[in-house]
Length: 397
Image 1 (cartoon, one colour):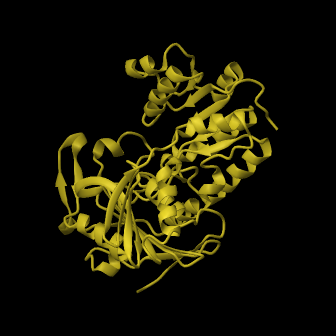
Image 2 (cartoon, one colour):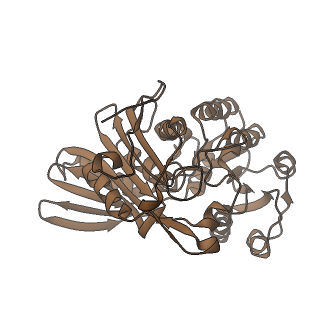
Image 3 (cartoon, one colour):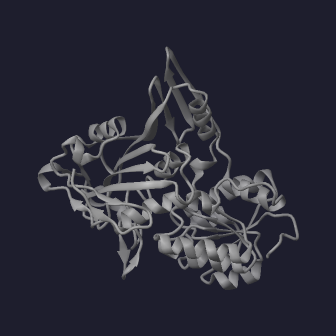
């Protein structure tokens, strides 16, 4: 079992482009206030001037094995295409490094099991990069629910509406794909852009571990000329009977921050997980509080300094999320929204599709805990249902 023999703080970043830029900015922030130090970058592509300025004078290598041997990092951040996560994370763990692995952790449940088995075999610490799960807002919502602030919970709804254009889908060969050369990627709206909505809703429901989900119903659609879904909904029934419905689109009319709503018999709680805002509306009370989120790298480093301190987002806390990913992966390919129900906007890299009425439909799904097909969307079809551990099958209404 690898042990930390010195003060934790030496970090290697794998994947500097895309979201890796955010990690570089965060590392600079942490370096300015503590002893965190970036000691190397693994990326097959050269860094542009901006990335190089953020990185400073650290080695950049295409081979992770060579970089790990040369730098002996305490933590390796994996911010690469989804289908490369498992092998890179295990490479780092076997070299004695802890791992901060970006979400979604893997594209399949089998890969997730391989990841956990491999990580546990090395004894390395691993944190999954669901930033929203480090927010104190989750504890606030659960405390309100447990205290009876909204009465009996009847379900949790998620409304997610963004726009993604041609530049987003053109940023990488795996973007907007369900698979690449036969290898699952599962880069759809529910599993990547709005993965935080799904994972956070499951955390609010207290349904994150193995055996916590009873059924998962999925509807996948695409308005843009991509392979994966960009307009989707799902409904989960947890083992204790809680209903969780998430409705999402990347073809919105008016993009806005996603929200999760906990519906109760006497009120509601709305969580804006990107900002940490929690709004309670019940029994004449209407109050909003804002809550900070812990930095997941800092939390991982603190854990390395004191192994009795639990991680905020260990792989085990994302098991039910991976059941959702598996349901999406095993569902039929997304149905195309017919041309008569969408319109093109923008040109060139800003070109994108908009589905008129989708914003209101997303809101209704989250409010009524119903699927698009149940709400009368003319382009919607019957969902696919999956029972964790069983093969999926299409169902009618």
